[in-house]
Image 1 (tube, helix red, strand yellow):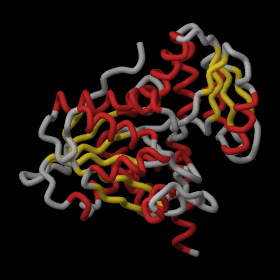
Image 2 (cartoon, one colour; image 1 turned 60 degrees about the vertical axis):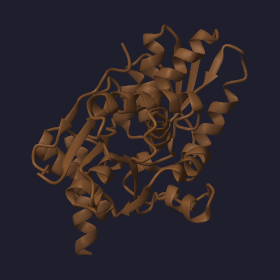
Image 3 (cartoon, rainbow, N blue to C red; image 1 turned 90 degrees about the vertical axis):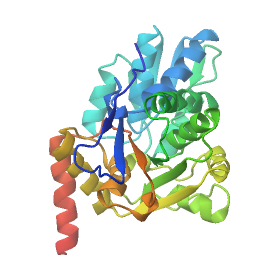
Image 4 (cartoon, rainbow, N blue to C red; image 1 turned 120 degrees about the vertical axis):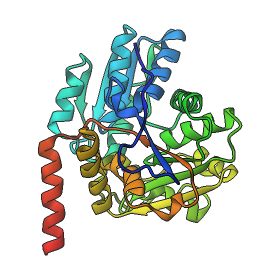
Length: 310
């Protein structure tokens, strides 16, 4: 059934007598990412309201999670992806039995097409991140962390559109943990959350130039931008090279592959980033990602080496 309760593991090498680094392994969800929680909750809610068909615009992770959840619930699904979605990810989505439609060169074009498919009463639109039911579903991750590690004082999350962050904030507030420091991580070239914090509201950035395509929301959801003010928080923006380092080091240490969108959160621990200063128990959410393989990791590494040698 979905989602599953994921392990909270002590990092085998980074922990010290002064600070322990914990890994919440959301990459072990059936869909390979934390998205299983929120999209699973949305699909279950839709079925309870009599919906029978899910339409999900997605570059990969959200669509795959929605397709798996729909299949588990006996619902049909259509996932609309842009032309930039890798062939391997498209094949993975298609293997769930969902209808796969390629439309548009960017997610916004896919999203508009998906919205046009949702006029019928039996159809549920499944956004990638901006929905309160999705946030509630993602917040169950915090229930598990608090049960395992009630003394957590810092949580580190990657931020794309804000669905994971909103889930973390929702769960922390439910457990009255407004004292927990929230470290929100992005890559340069995909830092729409930092732009929103600087402006005091969500703003649209010009383009996504980072390799961390799963962080590729041109504008974040409004609620987490406002809600994070209730918590001690730090916005961290790192270069692609740091995110890739996080992916490689994690693969070496845990023998697991994740996307650069996840690697940027891991990088804060590997870099002993100042955002973790004074913390005793740090939880890094290993959000996962399906658009990664050993071959793709090699392509990313070669690209970084070419940029540095140019």
